[in-house]
Amino acid sequence: MREFRTLAGLSLREFAERIDTHESQISRLEKGRANVTVVFLDRVAHGLGVDVHELLVPAEKSDVLARGVVEPEPAAARPRRRHSKRAVWVKERDRSELLPAIGARIREFRDLQGLSLSVFAGLIDMDPTAISRVERGKHNLTLAFADRIARGLRVELHELFVPVEKSDILPRERPAAKPGGRARTEGGHRGA
Image (tube, rainbow, N blue to C red; front, side, top):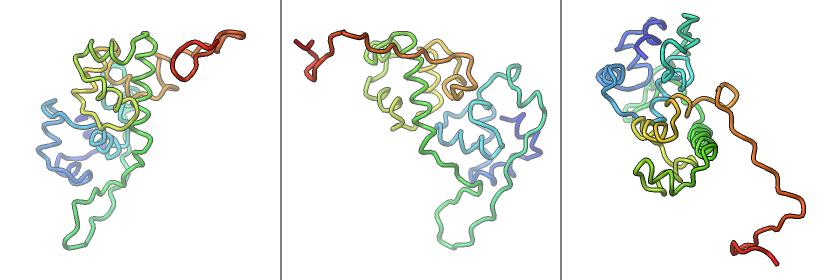
């Protein structure tokens, strides 16, 4: 993150103002001492003009740092309302697709390894309900939680955030139903 901020020519203060947070939060994050949510990390990435997964890719694998060019989007003007809530000066992206995309990616990795939700939850010592909420895009997970999931899936953390088309790890295709095979009925019992 510090490398991206430096390439963008932003001081700690300028960047903190850009994404409407305190300098100390950015400093702690750059030093790896803050456990932030995925939505906050997306705000940081947007302020730097990169995708979320690019903040998590090791420097030696990053094509953005290799290019040496980061062009953050210009900050919007500060709101002038006296009693306004804290406003994010970087225009917010639509997050309706962010969390479901990450959840779908986690489910793909879990399916690739043939792990049921309950078995996977036991592996990482988590509540299956929490993992289910993440997979459905209903939970704004923290980086620590995401790292725990990635370790359980034996993938690098950034792979959870990489769109399928940019990943080296592709989901397998689900097998089609066999013709003439017996279908399951609603109760989970084989049909007659």
